Image (cartoon, rainbow, N blue to C red; front, side, top):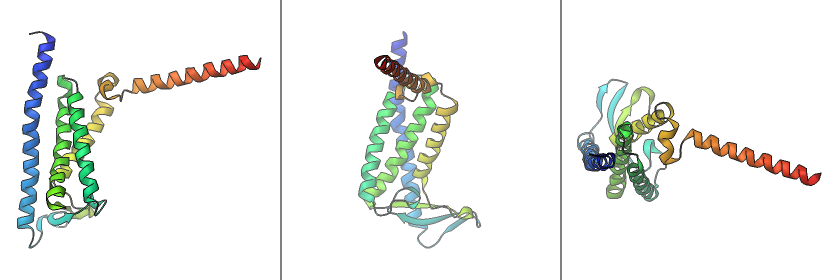
Length: 199
């Protein structure tokens, strides 16, 4: 089996696996919200007293209560973000070192779709995880999928992937340095030409 055939096979496997992972994450998010709406109406469920509890809240804004009442705008943003991330997923090179990047991208898309379903169908998002110790705004499983994946993705891009590994999305530090050097060279040439004209 030649290298091109292996690449095509690898890509096909990920396109089969990804929808199942995404479906499982979205289902888990939706079932936890359903259970929260059903079982937390009458009161909170304390996990660790004064530290962590399940406390029902309905959010008409973005994560952690931001942008309240902007449901239509947030729904559109969620759709655009999901489409962009799916495109990003397709662009990821077919190599084993990008497996974690693919999984993290699927996690972010799953979280975005999970909350988008709430906004479109219910007009609000169900939040129920409350960190009482620091009085952190309530959040849900979809928020967790998005947050942890984005944090890990940023860490990987800074400390794990090399410059050339990120060429496919134009985030190579080497390219940025090259552009800066080219700009500097152009400015130097312009300055020399100006001095020559003055002479």
